[in-house]
Image (cartoon, rainbow, N blue to C red):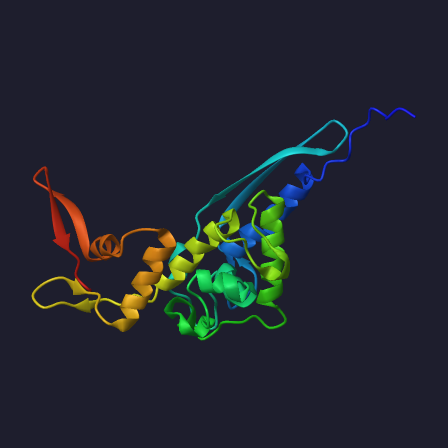
Length: 231
């Protein structure tokens, strides 16, 4: 008999699924454990949802503002940095972590995660939450998730996590007074951290060092490069 004119059902996620999938991503990057709340939102969020006359979601938008940026470098005792850092370290495959220069690294080994003395949340698996996050990103069109928790090399998801990993590594850079004036970024630990950041962000290490140790200031309508001081 002749074929029907109906089309096959689409495998693309619908708008409602995508709106719901935005929550794990926003929470991973904007929520953190505080002394009062294990999943405290550290940013403002305004969500718009558009409905059809039949009550179905046909569109939406999320606006974020006022992220607590200081939490990236300092947290109170007993609190944590943003969930995304711990989820990545706990849940990413060994191959993914190797590409992100995270192989063998625990949260306690990063300066920006260890200062508060709290790297876990009782009753919460950061590894499982990483799986939820990666699946949500896939639903939102940020592709790259592979079976077993791995990421396709060079995928959109890996590009996002490269920036996350770079933030961890740059937090391990320590400044010291240089002879004369300015600061020094010498030492093996700094060399490893700077090398990782430069590789992840695909920039020259010398340019990264220059940007961290100098400032461009305008003095009397002329631009001057001023060496940064450690204090």
